[in-house]
Image 1 (spheres, rainbow, N blue to C red):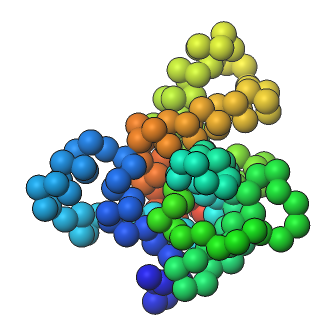
Image 2 (image 1 turned 135 degrees about the horizontal axis):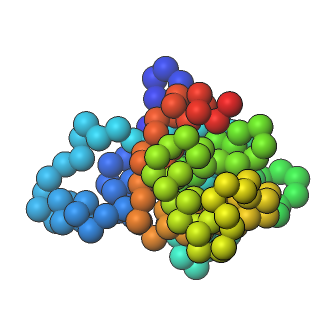
Length: 170
């Protein structure tokens, strides 16, 4: 349902919760609600990940929301040229941040992201005091996307609210 002020389409509690935690699944089975939980809203210009298996595009494909119309999102998927193909329900999408001016979606100012990035640098053998290459940073973002899809992290943990994401990615 579009948000009254911004026209954004938010993920309903049942759709947002279904991917993230086993605790959320247990809460749904027990009939408990997620009302009051701060959900990250999908807006025009934000990046999203496809969450459905067996469809087009493949699960985990990154895309950017081009337009929003009555609970339908028009998304340009990575590697796709020209106009977005078809409308997608927001229930099939997972919020994946807003790129900063360098094209990176995960802000290293967020403590959880910074800790994950330090572990990633140790794992690949990059000294902690060296800046990463662009390719290493892109690889890190792909790994974070995979963890987001698996449900290890929630978008709120990695990106905060939409306003916080815009401010921290400047």
